[in-house]
Image (cartoon, rainbow, N blue to C red; front, side, top):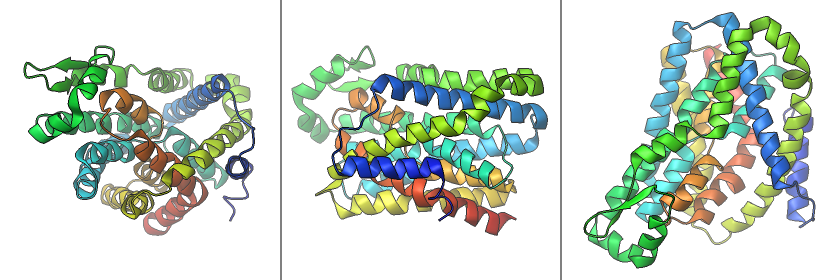
Amino acid sequence: MHNILDPAILFFVFGVLAGAVRSNLEIPPAISRFLSLYLLMALGLKGGFALSHSGLTATVGLSLGAAVTLALCIPLIGYAVLRRFVSGFDAAAVAATYGSVSAVTFVTAVQYLENQQIAYGGHMAAAMALMESPAIIMAIVFANRLRQSPVAVQASGAASTALLATAGGVVSGKPDGRPSVSIRKILHESFTDGAQLLLLGAMVVGLITGDAGKAAMQPFSGDLFKGMLSFFLLDMGLMAARNIMQMRGKSPVLVAYAVLGPLLHATLALGLSALLHLPVGDAALLMVLAASASYIAVPAVLRYAMPEATPSLYFGLSLGVTFPLNILFGIPLYVAVARSVLS
């Protein structure tokens, strides 16, 4: 209840309600993009300032290693489960969406930990960046394997081949006409993505400048942060309300995965945190990252790299179901469980 009464969360709820009644309230895309970049920059600075105090310790290495392990395991599990119920391409797309992370969910969790006065490592922002790309790469590998089967080629048809061929050099054709996606190109775009670079660059700035930089940037990365997060969550509430509608008529199995999958992923993160003896704050954030689902980076790549998948499916599940559940109930649940088990 305390989490729901937080002003930022209440703005999210307000956005959902405004979207549900089909209000014409909207945040211009340019402003929404600016808010997203601001939050990433502020988060990177916060992480860099914290890391300047703690330094690069064994705990930092263990946390980052745990993050990469989860980023590899979660999409594998998701694909193996979903392949039984939907097409291979849809299974790969949904698995990638849930194997990657939501920066806004992470930022909201950071704010929640600060409100609860729970310490966490600044390096967890780097963990978030590391967890974003592996699932995308694995989905492309799955898709390339699916396209090599005669059934998949026949189903995709010439239209998919033509669409893939126009994907900005990301896709190349094989001699037999079957399309394949360049992993090297995907890797380049993942690691040079502007949002990720801004996050990591801000962390480096915070690490280098330390306390002096923290004092200088306090009005930007401290005082404004809560208000900017509230504004952005209002926009996310509006988007979530619109995407909930897309879930009508979808398989109950998929909706169940969108609800129960994050809980399983968070449990895996908790077990790994207990095994590695991670601090409570780091473990809670690792659980949040594992339980979150991407609705920006992964859909943007999959739209052109995997046109055989259904965008309304993976985008609707992540933004219409999982994101609201994590923001309203998941974050306080994961933090409470981490404190109970690891304290």
